[in-house]
Image (cartoon, protein in one colour):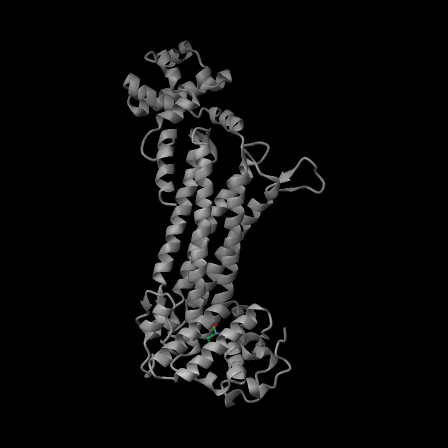
Length: 467
Ligand code: ARG
C-alpha cells in the first residue's frame, strides 16, 4: 500500500495556503492518524451517506450531486474492502483519505459533501458508531461466557468444594455456587455494557466544528438514518465529549478485572497442590524442559491483558482531563487506546469462555479439600445455638475448643467421638454428626443466595430466563 510519498504536496494540502510548503516529515508523523483510524472507514462512509442524503432532502445540495456522492462512496467502500484502496499518510486521516478519493472519482461534486459539517463532528460520529458496535459485540461475548458458566453450574450444583476467605478454607460451598458468583459478575458487566450503549445513543453529526451551522440541516433525520435514538443536544459538548470511549474503557477495565480474578483462580486450581481442575490441552502448554508440566498460559495471559486494558483507561482519562472545550487535537489519541482494549477484551473473553467450557472438574479432589481445614466448624457453632440454646458467641468459643482438640488428635471434627465432644460441652448429642459432613453443611445453607444445591438451582433458573 502506498504511503503517499510520491504524491505532490500541493494536491494534498486540503486546507490550502498556510502550510503551502508542506508539513515536514516530523509534522506529518505526529499529525497523521490514518495508521489507526482507517479502522473507521465503514462508519465514515455510512455517516457521509446519511449526511449527503439529508443535505439533498433539505435542498442544501442537489439530488444529482447526492447521487454521485453516494455512488462514489460505495465504490470507495468496495475498494477498501477488497484491499485496493491506497491510504496516504499525507492525507492525514481516514476522513480526508476518503474525501480525496471521492474527488478523484466524481470530481467537483465531492466538495459539496463537507457542507454543514466539520471533521470534529465527523470523527465524533465515526468513533461513536464504532464503539457502539463494539459494545454490541461485547454484550454477545459476555452472554456466551455467562452461558458457559450456567452449564457448568448446573452440572456441578451438588459438587462440594471448599469456599475460601483469605484463601484459607472457610466453609464448604458447591462448585455450582462458585460458578454462579461469576455469572453475577459478568451479568453486571453486561448491564454496564447496555447502559453505555444507552448513554451514547445520540448522533453527533451536524454539531459541525462546535457551534452548529446556519444551513437548514435536519439532525433528527441523520440520527434516525444512523440508528441513534436522536441527535445530541449541545453542539459544544458534542465535539468535546469522549465519555462514550471512557465508558467503554471503564466497562472493559471492570470486566477485565473479573476475568483476571477468574484467571487467577484457574491458575491456582490447576496446580498439582490444589488439583481442582484439569485444563484441556487447547488452553495450556507443555514445558520445553519439564515433561510433567502443563502450564495455564491462556489464563495467565488473560490475567495480564487486564494490565493493558486498565492502562488504556488511565491513558484516555489523562488525555482528556485538562482539555478546554471544545475539540483539541489531543483527542485523536483516543482511538488507539480503545482499539487496543477492545481487541484485548474480545480475546480474553473468548479464551475464558473456551477454558470454562473445556476444563475438567475434579470433584473428588474438591470434596477431599472441602472436608479439610475444619470447614464445618461454623456448622457446629450454629448447631449449638439451634439445638443447645447457646448464644452464638459462646457457641463460637465451644467450637474453638473442639477444633483445638481435633487438631491435637490430628483428625477432622467429624472424627471426634461423642465423648470427646461432650467433654467440651455436655449438651452435645450424636445428632451433631448430621451437620459435620460437608454435604450436610452445604445442604443446610438454604438462605436466599446461599450455597444449598436447591438454592443454586433456583438462581440458575433465574439467569437462564435472562440470558
Ligand atoms: N483525525 C482527527 C481525530 O482523530 C479528526 C478530527 C480533526 N479535526 C481537526 N479539527 N483537526 O481527532
